[in-house]
Image (cartoon, rainbow, N blue to C red; front, side, top):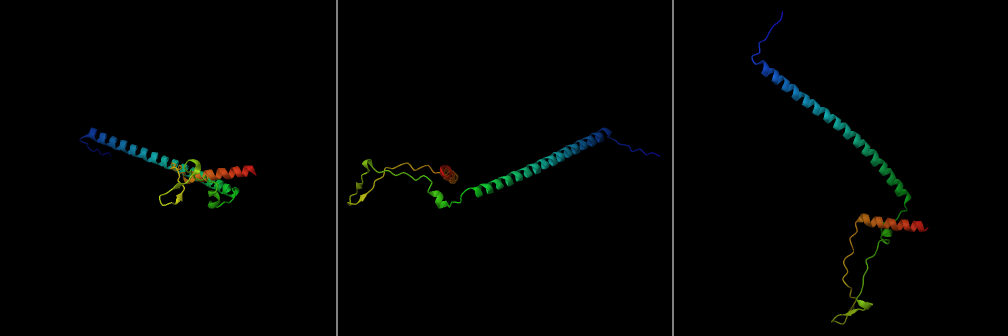
Length: 132
């Protein structure tokens, strides 16, 4: 026995069925693209972890090889700001009779960042080590 069901708008039903199938395929395509992206993200994260671990190990080795110097010891290698007096190095007199060194106004030395200062100090230490 077979039963038949009458469909009044068969073209409309086919169209809706095909449209829903099309939407389902787009959803699946997006889901698989998401899964692929997630896998790529995991691979990148593991690669980054290995690079960071290697970098950390290299930093530990570098710290072990460098001589231990305190921050105060490193500050002596930093350039000191230059001061100048008036022509001839003379001192000026104030109205009250007191003498005071008069300095030409120099532009302030360029501000070095902490990294630049440490780099400079490290270069000075390397120079000293090369001289030994």
